Image (cartoon, rainbow, N blue to C red):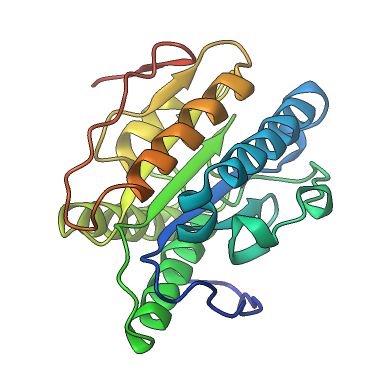
Length: 237
């Protein structure tokens, strides 16, 4: 599926007595994100990390990874507890196309690898989160592309749906500005969310509170998330 092997560096597990809540942010870094969207996204991301660090339990339990996608997918932050992350080092330089399909497969593979790390070390974990954000449509694979692109996109959607329904991870899709919401409805089991204007700060505030709340629960507890009305609207089929 991948056109090239994607590398990442492993980060040692910290606070091994604490269960882990892994969250991977899959963020559009294509050319269309240049300017204000990218600036606001980075500001929101920095606030998100700072807010999680203020919560003593989330600081020990939440592990964040960041994957950017443009012409290809790149992991700029391997899974790390938030107290290790220097948000000023998370640089974004929007350019190129939108390799969304590759990025989603990459995120799923990294989630599975981190779960193996937890299991090998006897660490319990919450269901991982995959949080996808885009302002466009995939250019590497697409349900309306050529036969290869259609086949590859079908593999991606099946992997996401199977993973969500079998409890392997949670998957959320957020559309920014002119994002193709039909594509996001196709990939996501839950209705995707269209962001209101550019409310990145409000979205990351909701996300940090939701993740912190999850980290304070038990790993077997069913979590109820607050409505997203303050920053976005769910788009149903």
